[in-house]
Length: 163
Image 1 (cartoon, rainbow, N blue to C red):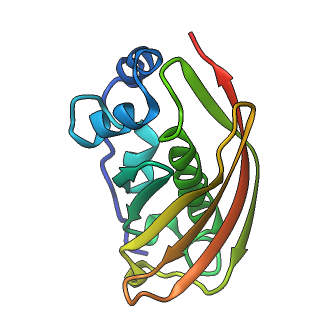
Image 2: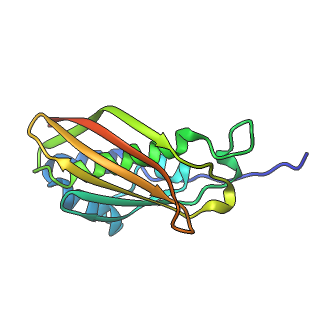
């Protein structure tokens, strides 16, 4: 067996969490992308990055590698689900005013083809299908480096005041 290693580093997530209540969702995401606020540590761990955010939409990229493999030698579906959940959530976040947050209620993922380390980078786009004051809905797609659709998702998210 050949041992492989990956070093993971991240910044203090409390900095971003403290800033979020005072910013609109879109401003908050733009501040993360502009490196004014740190990204969530999970992004570093899973090798995914928020690359675009606009009203009602968010795009992530993810470079899968062997550390994402399941026991049968393919990228674990949990990585793809997490990528989709992040894109759907951030798409909804772009519609929220300051002092308002969200959390996932449910997500339904359709896996359409397997992913290997060489399949990436993956591109995941989340789009709000219905914004709301209590519940919002979003859809997402994941494509591989060749542009092939590898997964889709629909989700609902709870919208609530934060302090």
